[in-house]
Each structure stands twice: as structure tokens, then as C-alpha cells.
Length: 189
Image (cartoon, rainbow, N blue to C red; front, side):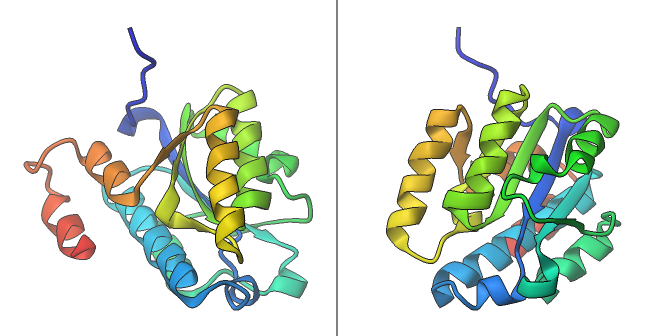
């Protein structure tokens, strides 16, 4: 019998880690564009399906605010204001764990950057806390491809499920009969 890797609407939350303007500028343009688009897709999915969503900002005084496209999606999803942090793991900010427990999440979809630093440390700590963690490889990035590749290995070793944005969205939808299916499938084209 395998581990239950399902994403269930009843206990899944989305956490966007440090998708910030100045940090994006340091990324390869294709990778940065993918993270922004895929993070916004996942936040929009959370909005349409009623899932809790939150986001962090690493030292916003230096790295700037959350990217406008993602921020707009977060605002539409009624996400709380960004949690500002200086620790690399989002769980280093106690508000993140309090929020996850408050929304009764047991499963967390993590997006953001950099994959081998803040995303990895957040995912590792979520796994250590017992959360079933899913990380879409196309919704995280690092400045260097080698760091992204290493991050995927470290994330798997920590016990998280490496997946894709589309896999997460269709898993949460469950059926083409879902009222959100048309809007989300249109968005993914």
C-alpha cells in the first residue's frame, strides 16, 4: 500500500515563497516568467476552489515586494498580507506554522524561489512538521539551472512530492465536471 499523495481540497493550502521583484530580476528570464505565471495559476486555483493561500517576502526592504502578477492573484484570493522574514525557511517565521494550523492544512503546495535556498528549507521544515508537501518543479526557480536541479533532489530527499503545476491543478479539480474546470483549463492553454 502506497503513501497517500492525494491533494484534497479539505486540507490543502498554497504557500508562495519570496516571488519578489528584485529577486526575479536575478533569475534567468524564462525561469522567472514560469515561476510568476505558475505561482499565479496556483493562487487562482486556490481562489476558485476556496483553498487557503499565503505568501512570504524575504527581506522586502532589500528585495522588493511580491511580483505584481502574483500580488494581484493573491489580492483576488483574499490572501493575508505578506509575511516578512529574514530567515530562509518560511517556517522560521512562526506565523506561517500558526497560519497552516489555523486553516487546518495537512497538505501544502509550495511555489517560489530560490529553489535551493528558501524553497528547499521551507519544504524540508514542512516535511519535518508532518505536512504532505507538493512542489511543482515549474513553479520554483534558482539563478542557476544546476541549483534548481540540486534543489529537486534535496526536496525529494526531504520527503516532498515533486510535481507539475498542471498536475496539482487537475488533482485539486478532480473532474472536468467541476465548475472551475473551464476557467482553469483556459488559463493553462
